[in-house]
Image (cartoon, rainbow, N blue to C red; front, side, top):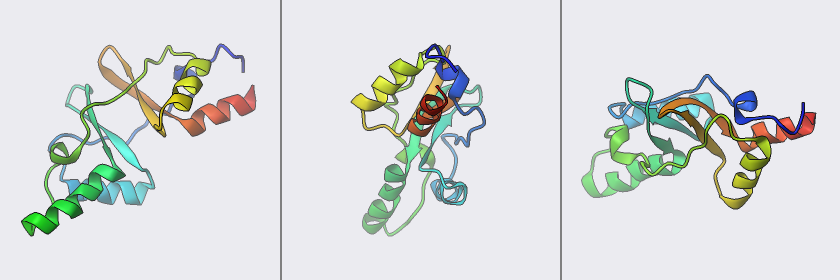
Length: 130
């Protein structure tokens, strides 16, 4: 593998995703059963709308103490200010981006559509094979 590796070469393409109308308790079940810490939220056309993370899900518990009801929809809890990268970004650039931010993973978006996700571990695997 060369240093000219792009995100497209290392990203995960099969993702767990949610829609705005997914029940948040169902989303939590999926996060736990799949052992993932978050997932992208997309519309029916595959456009990235947000991210639902473990932290977002913890808000359901906090809000339930005020409203005496646990649950709601993903759209009520997700983060809609999402950083993402294109599949053409080079591995060196994405490694630098991860060093500058606290993100564990980044959605990969081309032309507004979610095409994958890259994690810090994906980058480390690619570096290991260099």
